[in-house]
Length: 473
Image (spheres, rainbow, N blue to C red):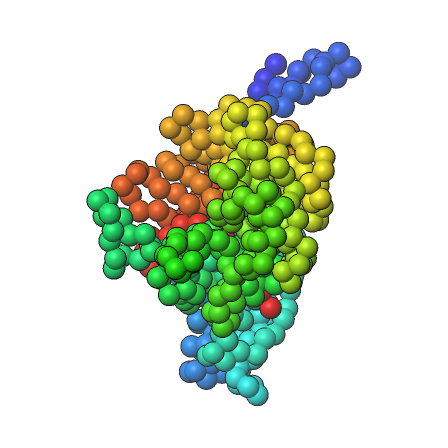
């Protein structure tokens, strides 16, 4: 009997699985079937040659250079692709603008894909024509054109990146998106700890560009959540308000319009009065942990009455307030399933924080996790096949995934303080908050489902509680 090792390429070479097998050299009729053992897994990005689109003028060339560089950075930031050095290129951009590529030249430098094109002046700006080739298969995969100007160049490049990504992977892209997050206000320090209690809600493009503040930094804000259309963000806001002739610290869910930055409360005084009356006159202490439904017509959130937390839903127009769980334990962090039929949440009703699922009307509550540790912040994948969560076992913190039926729990990363997992809009990546030590600043990281690729997203300062927007128009 002899042994050999082979390398099987899965999904266009993005992930390589190293396997070994044993084959008997005796009669094929007497030998057992081959035994295959997975011994190692590793990520091997597909190499792409990004050739600057040829411009018919100096300004056109500059537009093409910025355009292709944004696309290159997008692809190299997702872990599935790498960039071939332009020092190895045999054909130049001018030649590629006139003729089809010589596939052998690009195979020689081991390019898996080639992206090239041309730029010319057009009405309203410049016309960028993009061509994408599969070098191994020796075929043209995609050709499209887009009109750009200096104002929309970045957005157009992100949209082009999504189109190319979808053609190469068969999955939706995630480049023409935004990320909202929380940043501490460093200018004010309170308390003996020297920690600032003020926070600013910010948004930026997924690559860190165009960072904008959405709140004024006067309040403590947390847990921002985009609406499905990307136009509104729900978040928790702590602020001091004048109630009954005295100042009172209030903590409730608010909504901010991304375009106008106008902030409005989710619940009105009439809502609070009705909820209090329905609970024997008990005061509503706090509302928090908001999430939009997939169609944007409802929000679910947690509400604390008399120290106990229950889960509620409300229509986007402010009607139909409904309690889904009874406030006898701590039920929190609700999130809708991708089809809008289920809500996942955490509860300590069994004694420790575990993950539960129920129908959106509060019926058919089922616990789906029972392993050791405290579970928190569960959220359905946009694909509906997995639930991401954060987990604490002793002093260790993890980001993991589990199937909606509770099977296949897998811890993807252990990274100091790891929390607040959220999905990319295509369901391939998870964004989360990482803090290496208690004194270190919090940072936003992205990790793929294999757990083999992880990188930090660059922000101007400390950042956490990030949430990925849907694909934007």
